[in-house]
Structures are given as structure tokens and as C-alpha cells.
Image 1 (cartoon, rainbow, N blue to C red):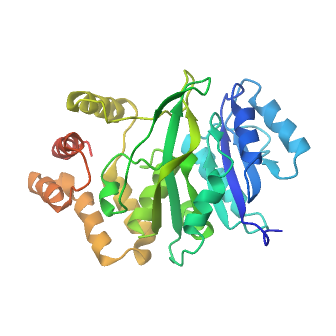
Image 2: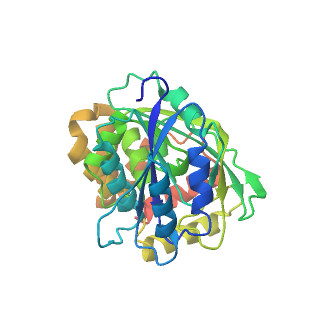
Length: 316
């Protein structure tokens, strides 16, 4: 079934998405030069989202809706990872995987563009592709075009990830590694996959192009967090609010979990970097050691300043 064209499983997580989810699904089904199967799980919606998903399950053989009886609200991260594990259990042996939000619109060559970038990878720890996004309003009018450029390096482990799940395509090797365990210190499914891939030296490819209309509206479960026009004070305020109210990212705990669970796949250089992060809160000297160990290239000055302050006050 998957011989003539690449076969990809798209993981769709939904929650109260009735307004836009059908448009999202249709844009996935219209993908060119790939065989797409959609694996959907709803996280306890109280609107018409499940009715819409059930309609597509009835009408499309390549649309699969997880039926667990009583729906349990797992939260964003566990909703996606649970559904990824489900897709991996199918006998089709999908070669590639992608995450999908419930409210965007994909260009027709979004998936094949990612697949073509990683299809020749021989990395034993898998391959990950992600791209820029085109930010639009609820009517799909363009607000702005992302212009990030990221060089693949361990440096990206320290900073806010620009690897949004809705732009990702990854191969089966990374899907298996990323779903066998997930740290409680990772807030989101895409953040987990990206940071794990960094630590494992998986092949990571960033595409400056955009193949997605990333919709911003009043009911976004997650939105984009642009830093280009924000002041240092604003970024610090957002960071502290996130850490104290939302639980924040705990890089030390995340590093400890990754090192414990994947030690046999991490090289000595990355193992030492993770240990430096794990131990940074133990003393002021360790914080300085972490700051000095990071090769802070290709980052804007205000991002670097904010990151150093976060390390010094223990909010990294």
C-alpha cells in the first residue's frame, strides 16, 4: 500500500475545535504525492468536534478516530503522544509521521516537502523536519510571514523552540524513540520531540519556507510567541508568568530524564552538556559554568540577555 508514494500518519489532536477543524482536515486530505492516514483523538470536547470527526471516520477509510468509550482529558502533550503510539501500533508500518493542530490550513505540498528533506536520512536516531509558518487571522488574512533561521545545534536546547508540531515531519525511527517515554518536564509534544532529537543528534532539518497558514484567533489552545518585537522586560515578565502560573519548562529535570532514559544513544559531548544543565542550580558557580559553556551564536542579544538572567535566577 505504501510502495508507490510515501505513506504518512498525521496525528490530529482536537479539543472544542468545531469552528475550524473541518477546514484543517480537508487541507490534510488534499495533500499531493503522499498517501495520508489521519489518526484523530478528541480530548473531551463539549461542542460538535466529535460529531465532525465521526463524519469523516464514516466517509474516509484513511481517517481513524480513537474510541476509548469514556473520554479522558489528557492535556495537549499526552493527547498527541497517546495518538502517536496508536498510529505506530497499526500494521501499515507508516514511514513518516506529522502532527496537526485543529485550526490551520495546509498547502498541498506541505507533507511531501518535509518528506523529501529527510527521506535519505540514515541517522540511527531518526530525522526531524520543521519549517516557518505564515501567521494568519481567523479569516486567513495574512498577518505576517515568519522569517526565522535556525542552525541545527545543541544551542537550540537552551532557548524557546521554533519547531512547532504543526510544521513537523519525522520518520519512524524518531517516532518510536519519542513515544517510548515522555518527560513530565516537557510541556508539549512537539517541544519533547525536538529537544529529544537535539540530544540524540538526530538529523534535524529546518526549512525557511512556509507551507502552512497558522491561524490565530481567540480560542487558540496554543499560539505563536513572537520575540522579534518584544522588549527584554516583556520577555522576562512572560517568562516569570509562565514559570509561576503555567509550571514552566524545567530544563534540569528534562535533561535528567533524557539522560536517564536514552543514555546509550547520547554521545559524550551531549552527555556532558546535559550534566552541566542538571547541576546548574546547585551553586552560583555552576550557573556561571552553564552560561560560559553555551556557544551563544545566531541568537539576538535580547534573547541571550533574557536567557542568562533566567539561568542566574534559577528559572531555566
